[in-house]
Each structure stands twice: as C-alpha cells, then as structure tokens.
Image 1 (cartoon, rainbow over the protein chains, first blue to last red):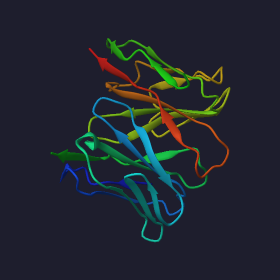
Image 2 (image 1 turned 60 degrees about the horizontal axis):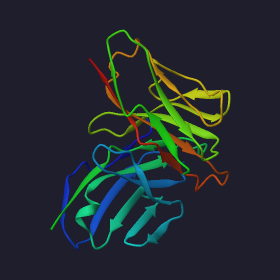
Image 3 (image 1 turned 30 degrees about the vertical axis):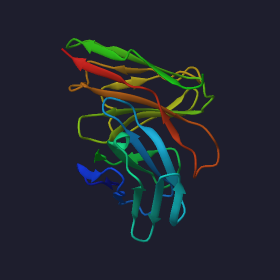
Image 4 (image 1 turned 90 degrees about the horizontal axis):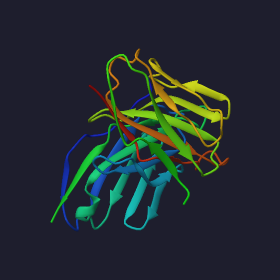
Length: 112
Length: 115
C-alpha cells in the first residue's frame, strides 16, 4: 500500500526560528510533491510544489526533494505565530498525475 | 471571483438518511475530487472525476455516490450505507495539462455530523 509518513508533532519552535517539516513516501514512481497548510477547522491551502531533486525557494519557504531517499521536506524561515497550523505533505500516485496521497500532517506551533 | 464553493458549511444527518453535499467550481477545471478528513488523519480520496460524465472510485468509495453531469459541478451523496459518515468533507479541483505541476485546489469544506 502506498503511504506518506509525517511526524504528527506538535513541532514547537520559537518565533524567528527555522521550522523543519519532514515527509517520507513509499511510492518510488511518485513525481510531484506538494505542501499544503491547514489551519484548524479550515481547508488545506497550497504552499508550494516540487518535482525536481534539490531545493525550491519561495519567500520564507523552501521545499527540498530527494527522490533517491524518498524524502521531501519543508523549511520555514523566520517562523511567525501565524505559521502555526498543520502542514500536509501530498504526493502523486505513480502512473499518472491525477491522484494524490496525503500524509496525516505535522502540527506546527510557533510561540512568541 | 474564481474559486470552489461547497454547501452547506455544516450538515446534520439522522441515522438512515441520505444527504447530498454540493461542490461547484468556476475555474474551468476538468478534474474534481472528493476527500474525507477525520480528526488527526490525512485526507482520504472518496471519488474523483477527470471529465464530465465520467468518475472513478477512490480508496473509500463504499457508502458514497457521485455524479458529474456538468463540468462545474460534482455533488457527493452520503448514503445510509456509510456507517460512520461524521467527518469533514473536502472538494477539490485541478486544471492544467502540464502534469507535473498541476495542482489541486480545495473548497472550504462541509462538516457532516450524524445525530
């Protein structure tokens, strides 16, 4: 069974620090990887996607992908209390781009 | 405003009732999805549709039904056969043809509670 694993947390970081969120996946054929942020009681919103090995930066966010290790991470620099949320990792199912498998999410708490 | 709308926001169902959740999008997206989220768990795929008049079962389709008669609409019916329907239901849509970068965007969700 294809799986996406995330540490449930909570991951607690002080304001201004770097938060590092990790995700591993079992499907070697997965080609695209997504990070969503979900505030309590709300729907997920896309932060960024990555499909090439290496780093991809977008503002305070950096996604890192290592397909050989089947590992994707999200770094949040200069963490703010407003970043406190659950972060969902999602990967495409091999054989097509039309289905995603989601991890259970990591809860991040940024304290002042 | 372009986006995905879901209604109602909250829904209460009695035992043995069928209920229908609405999902509408004006993004001109071809693909639409229904997910279920339980507390502390990730999203699980119920049904998806890549084109009008066609849909496929996801991982947990039992007790649910869908239709896709129009590109912009993908309603989900939760039938009485679904034994544990209390959950947060999320609809998503996806456009594009590039494959690798095509992204699913979510509606605001419907919270269903069985009384």
